[in-house]
Length: 352
Image 1 (cartoon, rainbow, N blue to C red):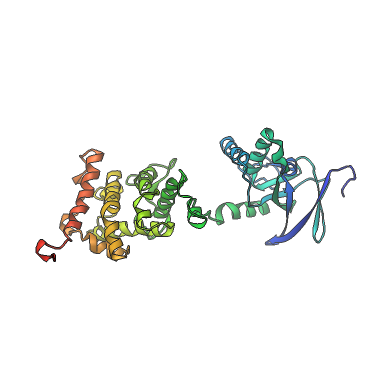
Image 2: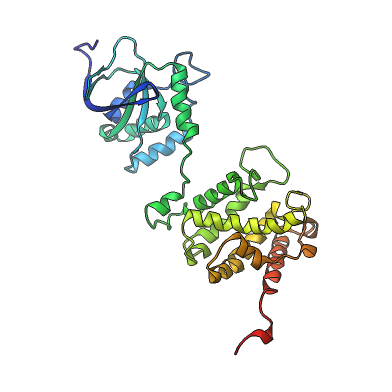
């Protein structure tokens, strides 16, 4: 029942279901959403529906700044109504929502709402903006967890840099090349067909001997993904093409090392080390990509033909491990360059 003394808003709504859970979606002002919401964190709050993680102050500050720059959020905020004394009145097309403090748990969007609250302290007009809310009624913890897990684990976020391919040429953005390099590294690490599947170490993860650092891959690829980099010069601008090119290249190298059963031998494989990976990327970006472009093929088979590594002269880790990083990197590049030069016609084969 709704009291006549309450502040009640009326909004058009659409009702859908998540399994057997009704979900009512409608437009609401930021200030009203901030007022009715609260966070029930798992492990801290002993109540039904407590599934949220603890808030990150750094993330809230970042979102606040994003909002104050004039930005909003397209995706909906998911709330769970828990107030026991008042219940929204839900009709066929309308919802009447009492604006009561801490009446609805946040299932998804806690940091965004906290960012809005922080932004409102600097600019009260932020509170007059509208956002989309999807309201569930008195969910159990199990039901709330199903929704939370669906959003945070089952739905894999799109690669950050994909927006540049989808929504125009904003490649001058200073974060573009870093995001793109991260996306390629993520593909190398998670694609089961990648030579580096599960072989890339991310910050905060346990050290695994033989694993490549994420920073190594990002640093090696970043300059070649910028506006003047070789990938864009050769019209390899889409993320999928760039991922395929890098993956195919190392798959071609792996082909020769697999024949001698060396790729998975961490004490032998130089491409599981920073200098080996960097030297290989130097060769790819300075030599091999141009050869593949002339052939109009960046396939594994084409790269195998160009690499043509001699099984009796494979570069192994012992040959570079005593060298400093810069020298080892140069030696790896020269190793590939020399094999590629061997593919050139002899002087007498040229026509003048």
